[in-house]
Length: 271
Image (cartoon, rainbow, N blue to C red; front, side, top):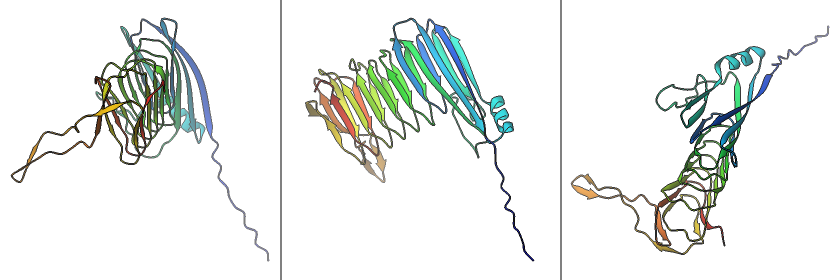
């Protein structure tokens, strides 16, 4: 007697839907894009309006999962005077004061929003994303708050001051005009490669655990900043922030560079 064994194979049929949308806003002084999964690319234009192209991709392992994504994921757009905010919304948002994100459990579906944006040069930018992401900014002159988690940040021929922070990725910035206010560059797993114009005047503080600190500007030493003293078992103790401080030129706004795994490079773009 012969026995024949049949293997049963279960195949999940993936479902995906892509949509494209264009939005235009006038009179914008501040633009906030609060993304979750996907890139944000911003370029300065010659016009007076903000123009945004949005590609949304929803996918799941079945038509029912895709239907759930379409029900739960949305893009909220608000304009209040000169402030425009676009926020990718879903069950992962706390809907509290800071609209923080908390992913819990297995993903039932996937979603990606990719933003391509053209703005007037002086618009103030606040850009955030988390996954499958990069952020790029080209040619803007306003101040900025740029935040990523799993991806790099690149800014080219920009002006203004602010913060440029990511976790897993590098930061690369090329300035058309040096910052006039305090500015911070941070990563955890990535190098910081920042190029300024000649004639930079700044107080610079740099820190890395696994990498090097480099600059081709002429520098003089600054004292290492210390925290306020603390009384421990009858002894007054100060602890250092372990930041390397240097003064470039005649000193000026504080520029802070901090990473854990990577180099810090403060460059003169004219050299």
